Image (cartoon, rainbow, N blue to C red; front, side, top):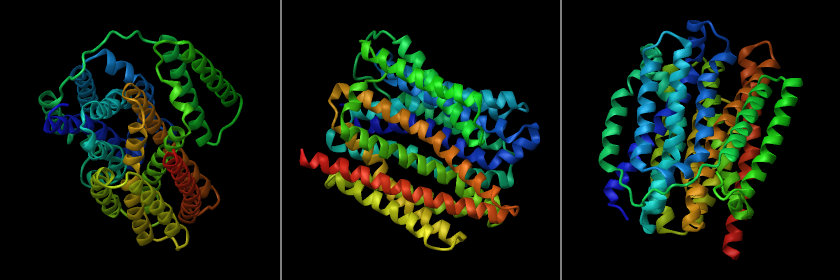
Length: 456
């Protein structure tokens, strides 16, 4: 085991890159109207600043296990931090939409490398009695960033041009680079593992086609192109599964999916991230459109939930280590259900939105990181990297689906009324109803999976 202080430093260094990427991703949601006007592009085009980032990240993440076995951790970190730094400079100093998009794609590369690397370092180097705490710190990156993004974006855009969203984080990236150079250590010797080109190619086709199809459905389109995309997605998925079963060096270890417990907790993890990203898109838009809040006010209204998430997520790992690890998960998912009960059975208002979002973040902080920790802790040591990669791929894809779901529900509501305010409120009400249903499904999945573990 490596020195605990160095390990914490390594987690922070790698995690900050992913944190900043997600913060910028959600902060840009507020800047989209301004960017559309400046670059004279449509909403569908400007959306690629987020979608492109997610797509690149999601394609790279599944190869995290291969990269971790084949290359030194510090080498992977350097590729990630340099990609992120160059991408941030490109985005912060450009007057071209194409260059801005290119910068976001480079940031996506950093996120695709960084997320699996962070959790791999924890699983590989953390003492067993500290793994819950350190996983809590690591997962805080994923859960906290979507709440911080709109707050950060709202404050900056209220006083500075959108380029400042990128320029202001450049010093932090450089500090993170220096911290990583001092903290990241290698405890296992890299081995020459062959790359599964067939599996990698078909997995990439599957991810691209399904995301493209999802975006088309968000625009409420379904025709010949969507049918072709659906067929491509199905065929590429089937061929990928066939290739992986025959491969000695599979990109993803499909045998892990034979465990009902692993599958149940993975789906719950996916749905929680989907809810989180859905709310990070939905609430800032609703507060500005339906309740006439400025970007600065919106950021301040969302800030309590972000702070709550940070505090609870930090405590959740300690609770996991010191008590029954099932306790924070079960308590967390019950609180999440309660947050949507509050939202659904009260008239929509600024105060109800703020209260329900804070309550949601309490539940998310307790459950989210511990679901992943609990699931991976039940795997054999040699399987933990593969399990980590699966969780990170699912997490990244859930972000794309959550944003698309929020956009679809909000668009549907607005289409029901000629008045944008009433339409937005209708979309908000429908969204809360859908998210309540999803949260109940999450609670059932967690309870069934955890009871099954106890029975064994």
